[in-house]
Length: 287
Ligand code: PRT
Ligand code: ZN
Image (cartoon, rainbow, N blue to C red; front, side):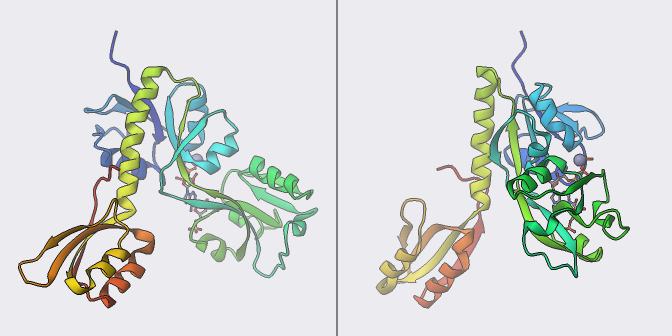
């Protein structure tokens, strides 16, 4: 009997392909180049990669063609497949939104009553309309949704928005977000114990990579008279490392800062007399 391998479905080409392969590489999983093939594998982790259109990934994971997969929540929820959402992967985040013509006065979901809305997300749109007790006509189209209002096919659209420039260029404006969509790892509901164990191993690595991306390692020189104040600004993982410097009266302080409150803390450190502040990226972070 051969070694058990975990089968992962990723997008063949498109917005999620590179992010998916890069994430695996950052997890130390070598991927043998095979984008033109249907399938490839890793040389150093029991993982087989299958390349599909993103829309097909939830179905293949539900049907156990693949054990796990990477897709946007927009695609996962619209597919209505029975798969488990395991982890937010932190890339290609977007919004599924209702957009209307630039000049329209959108004053809530009731604006949509009796209107025609073009979308490739009929299920999620219908759920939104039902929740708001609005009756509208859904026109399911397969691409270039944003041109529908301009050619008189619809009064509004429901589509993915990222920067908003596609809407802007088509004379539309975002009126309401109906889903904040993240790229997620999904799994089949009936994995064997061996496959669950491999998934745990993969998730451990994914989480270490994600944490590292959100944090920076910081080194600075602190005058001893302000050391306690400076330390109080640093969250660190436990407490910061403090080492005496060759120059009397000074210490070197090492710690880890979260990206979100990074600049605010740097300012406080500077005003407390910290000097020679170095900030370095962290590759992996295991707590
Ligand atoms: O061939 P395949 O079916 O696999 O690919 P696809 O063309 O269906 O998907 P792809 O590669 O375009 O997107 C894959 C996933 O990326 C989506 O399901 C989302 O989860 C996510 N994502 C993130 C986006 C965007 N950002 C995005 N901006 N998907 C689509 N867009 C499109 C959107 O449809 C609209 O046309 O970009 C336009 C809006 O972008 P802005 O920046 O102008 O607002
Ligand atoms: Zn697609």
